Image 1 (cartoon, rainbow, N blue to C red):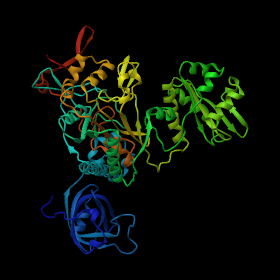
Image 2 (image 1 turned 90 degrees about the horizontal axis):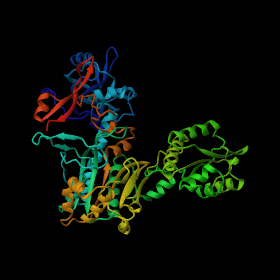
Image 3 (image 1 turned 60 degrees about the horizontal axis):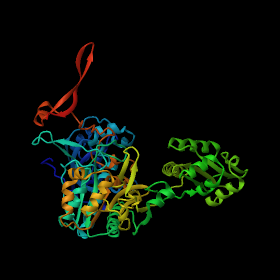
Image 4 (image 1 turned 180 degrees about the horizontal axis):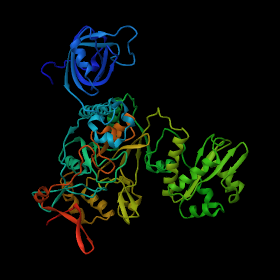
Length: 612
């Protein structure tokens, strides 16, 4: 900051009640309009914009400075704030009733021509925006996202403080543990050949804190997962992490609802707890998703009983093999649904892995089907109509397959139809607890049971006797919180007994030796008087994204990575020097290929392997 002019006000503070006051402002030149005499400059800082005017007849020295101003120059000005003349006010701007004729102006820094205009940021390729992120973040819409993130973080901290939580930081350099995703590994210089892992979550540490006697813990925690990226996923992300001692599901959910009430209030959204609850079985059975969007209907109708007793081989075989025949009713859409629409939806169902899409339509011309009348009797079609609750003007869409496939295909089709047909009420804010998840689920690729959430989730008390004899039927004391069809958090009551934890590990194929190697310190701690405890983690990035109305979490993270995990601004990740690798006792493994009998180094970056 210049020694000549020292800022004493912010641009966004300029209002009619400050007219007549001497103020000093600093910021960036947002717009310059030279009218051949008067020069108008829009000055911008983090709080807003205000109009400056240079008149050569009033102050030639300031006017001479203004003549040389360009967009994004950094300047400081001082002078007396005045009201705008009648007819020139901008009532759409908070500072549009005032302006400043500076009596002093100083250029604090110049700016080279920009790679893109800030007011055109939304039209600029994202790769360019990320490369020049420091410019992108100057845009008001991006700045507002960071402010919203800050406000939500502060609201969470204030609320949890009133609920008796303390904020505790947990380690970033950890031991690698199997938590479902790939770890980022960091070599240890002091322990050659050994590696740290960056935490996928603070799960083991927060449970250890409960055993340590910390009654209520929280952390706005950085987490890391080395996995393929998409719009709502980053290699490093932030979650609002909470853990409680001596609680049940209802208490965790009550506190979480309080956190969400305060967070959503930052965006001007009023929530009224308690939120609706739905079992996992109902969510999958009615909506084909464990995170259903309840802003519109299209619940599934079950026609399996009809299929089981019919002579249509496709339906009958599916039903007798334990599959399902289900459908969606589009009320009042028969006249506006063409054959082209139906064919397009059938193709979409196939692209989702479905075998096809059968349909029944009740238009003005009478009943039409996708050929079902050739295979089903009139009575069977009537049964389907009655189960569907359909009538004249309606369309029924039907899928037959294994239960899991029906849920996937019909669930995705439901979301497509909701958007395509304009059925989603964008003014609604639907929050939902999904509960009673299965504790384990069979993974066909792994060929074994896997924990649906994580292996520290407690089974329901009434299912304890089935943990060894029938693990797939065991329900978990787990709960996910869903907002408008997006999961924004999940948690569970934890296993606090070492014997039960060992049984849970055994169910997913972790023998005692492996469990001890990976989680030995937790298993030991559980034998030291562990209290009953539970918790939840809310995805801060995703929550802020939804409340800001953004399509990608990259827009609410200051310096995000691309889908390849790269940072265009800093060029991370980058190659390490030989000196650094030698210190870590790691060397470059060169990619050597043979060409006409010669060995050549094709990739000197290579891959890294430990020396020992």
